Length: 348
Ligand SMILES: [Zn+2]
Image 1 (tube, protein in one colour):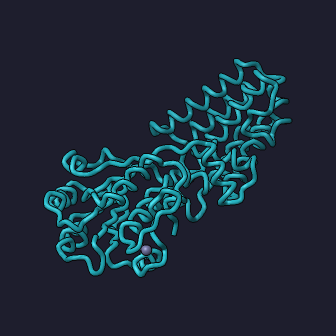
Image 2: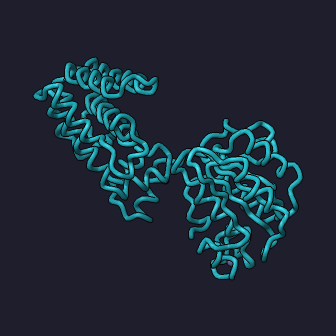
Image 3: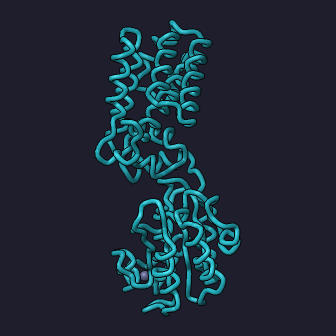
């Protein structure tokens, strides 16, 4: 299990936690908010482990868990009796019964072996109103040893009375160069690929790691650019068949699927297109491949920029934006993609 030194970026969050550890002045409740993949669970685990450690040590000015005391060993194997993760049965809801059983009913029992008792609540936004109201009672008069860490993708889902009783720690987007460094140092990703993944991840470390470690994204990038390069010679029907095949859900993507299209694949497909045509604008303006994202596609990019005007490329980017907003406002996704591809084809 990682330590504070393994957290790239998130300086404010680290500073806050370090200060709390040093002074032993803890809030009874924290909310860590951030998008999926941003590292909320990762940081909560590091904080909980350090909090419970019996022998914290200072390394390069950072207070870290020792990693070898009985508490650390249990925390690392996820079997610490005083670090409790609240679970829920239904994927979309944390029910009032679950809050009562796992939190309210448990919180008065003193820690088994530590000074603190830490509750981690992943997907906190899934507590429905009854669950939140019940949780609020616990927050109003918590026993002194309690530290609750709520993780959430959506702060707006909480009652204001909950938010006002918690310290809110937002995950911040991590800089591209920090992500690139992480991918190269920790995941041994080559330079150009690390840069590509960092651009696409938009500050989300988990997404960058996922992009860099899977072949899915690289394959999708190659297929997308191949499709665009053949667009002129393809009939609409064949074009859509290829797109549907590219965006078809895999087994794990099944639950994000909408009308036979994996929405995560779709998001990445759209990002790839946007970055590709942005590359074309950059290349057309500078004639230089140093600032391109798709450095490995420079011959294709240069061939398009020779025959297309700025206006053509801008129209294509507009078509991409239109398709995106249509799809997010629930227009039939296949139809919106088809119109978009026809638009791209016309301007190429
Ligand atoms: Zn320890």
